[in-house]
Each structure stands twice: as structure tokens, then as C-alpha cells.
Amino acid sequence: MPFLNLAAIRLCTEAEGPGKRIAIWVQGCKRKCPGCCNYDMQEFRRNRIVNTADFISVISNAVDTYQIEGITMLGGEPMLQAEGLAYLAEWCRKQKLSVVVFTGYLYQELLDMNNDFVQKLLKYTDILVDGPFIEELYDTERDWVGSSNQKVYYLTEFYKPGIEFENRSHSMEINISDKTIQMNGWPY
Image 1 (cartoon, rainbow, N blue to C red):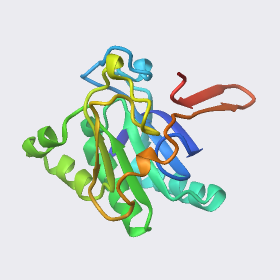
Image 2 (cartoon, rainbow, N blue to C red):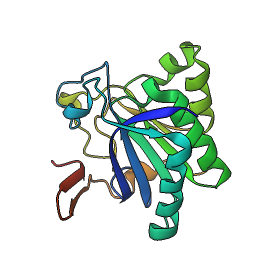
Image 3 (cartoon, helix red, strand yellow):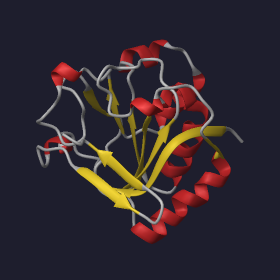
């Protein structure tokens, strides 16, 4: 089974795509977009290594505990770990869970890569948000999209096109536990 190098996990979020979702951020990104809110996830370093087969139980528990409807994959750059993420996405599809992927690559770039794992990940993706984050184009019209240059592709019929305009605002979540404070979503 493939492994993933994760930067962060949120077992239940409503800020990283439609509905309640589990969100996983991968570690490492070549794009290094200025103004990226996940700057600490850009560095290529060993962070939290997980076996994808073992991680399925984490997703299952999130479904049972929080009634999540899907998974969001972001980063870092998910396409750099497409093998492991495609495995998770395929499992999610079989469970009737939706898959949302955020990537700094353009959709056409992904198609042109001729990478079997990237193609498999796209096959099991319901919503793809593509393109680099451009700070000067900060998007205030769509719920979970960073900048206005980024496009939302509905690759399946799981969601109705246009749901990214549902609230017309970004949200931020803060989770405080005994030892950590976690924040996700858009802080501004």
C-alpha cells in the first residue's frame, strides 16, 4: 500500500469544501505561492507518514462520529502524492463519499502530465479547484476558493455546479484541545 506524508488532518470541517468533510493536507509543494496560507506545508520534509490502508479507518471513524459526506485533499500539493491520494479517493467513491481536491496545477497541466496516478486521482475526484493562489486576486465571492484565477471543475454529478457561491464568504474554524490550537479556512 502507498504511504502519504501529511502536514495536517481535520476530522470534521465545514470550511474546506461543501458540507461536513474530513480534510487532509499533504506536506510539500513546488509552487510556493506568495501569500499562501499554508506556508509551513510547502517545505519538502518528513512530517506525519501514514499508510493509506490504515488511514481508511480514520476516514471511517470520521464518517461514524461526525457524519461527514466527503474528503478534501489539499496542501502542500496533492498531485505530488497522487498515488496514495488516488487510493483513498477510490475507496471514498466506493463508500459514496465525495472527493474535493485543491491543486496549484491547472487542470490541463494535470491532463498533459501523462501520470497514471494523477489520472486515477482525477477519475475519483468530484470537485477539482485548480490553479496557483495569487494573493492580489483574493476571491471574496466564492466560499472556499482562494483567488479568482482558480477554476472549479465539477468532474462528476455529485454536486450541483455553483455551490461555491452558496454563502459568498470564506469561513475560518478554530479547534482548541489540551495541547494544540488548530485553525483552518481563510483567516481574512
